[in-house]
Image 1 (tube, rainbow, N blue to C red):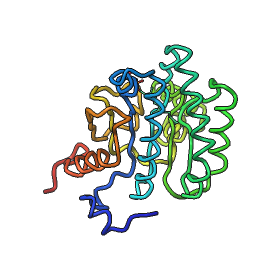
Image 2 (spheres, rainbow, N blue to C red; image 1 turned 90 degrees about the vertical axis):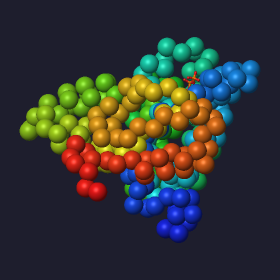
Image 3 (cartoon, helix red, strand yellow; image 1 turned 180 degrees about the horizontal axis):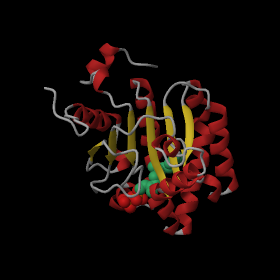
Length: 243
Ligand code: FPP
C-alpha cells in the first residue's frame, strides 16, 4: 500500500521533506534483552519484528532507499553462538519475507562481502538480489559483513583499473550503493552517538539523529518522530540558508 499525500500529512509529515535515502544502525538489541533478563539472541529476534515494520513503512511512505546495518566486519568478534543466532535470523527472514517484499516491488541488495557467511545465507541473499533486481520500488540494502573502510579501498582499487582512473564517477560505481542517492538521514538507535564504519562516503551531507530507544522498541511511531526531526533540519550542503 502506498500512502497518499493526505495520509502522509496525517502522520505530521510532508512528501517534500521525506528523505530519499535513510540509513539505520539498529543498535541496542543486546541491552534490550539484558534489561529483560533474556538471552541476547532474543533481543535480535525482537529486532527483526521492528525491521519488518520499518521496511514496510519506508516502502509505503515512498522512501527511495533504506540501508540497514545488520552485521559489520567487526561483528565476527562476537561469540560463535550469537553469530549463529544472527545467521538463523537472516535465513528465517529471507525465507519468510521474500515473497511479500517482492510483491511490494522492493529491490533487495546486500552491502558487503556475503561469501564469508554460511553457504545458505549467501545463497539466499544472492537469490533475493537476482530475483528483485528489476523491481522499481524501495531499494532495500542490507549491510552484511559490511565495513565502510573496506568498501572505500575496494572501490578505489577497482576505479584505478578503469580507463579514466580514480574519478568520482569511476569510484562511485564500485561502491556497494552504486546508483543510489546519497544518504540524507542516518539514524542510530540505542543512545550511542557513533558512526561505526557505516557508509562513510555516502553520509557526507547526511543529517544524524540518535534516538535513545533500543532497536526492538523503535516502532513506526518512533520512526515517524525521527522523520519529523529530519524535516525540521535546515540543510545547506556547505552553502548559505535560502530562507
Ligand atoms: C546491534 O545490537 C545489532 C546487531 C549487531 C544486529 C542487528 C540485527 C538485527 C536487527 C536482526 C537481523 C537482521 C536481518 C536482516 C534479518 P547490539 O547487539 O550491539 O546491542 P547492544 O549494543 O545493546 O549490545
